[in-house]
Length: 118
Image (tube, one colour):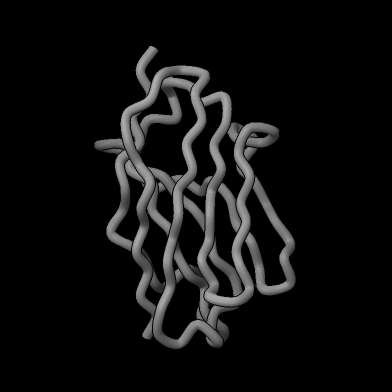
């Protein structure tokens, strides 16, 4: 089992920055990759960014150049630095973990709300 807890969401204005954190516990050695996803009411959960065990990163086109994903090696805490925020970035942000042997993300946090006002 892997436990994930997000923090750092809030209400900001367009153009501001925010940093989300995802603390992990449990069988972190089983994690192949971690990522951030976001969801607005009535829509599916969308991919935002991913970082794999070797540190390789992938971003959605909508956030490239504005968001940066990172993680610490020591305690496997993951971050999402969000700069130049736009109202369309408003969503509940979830961190997820993709473990070895699974076919997709199989662990999720509870989510944290990010609201960007215009």
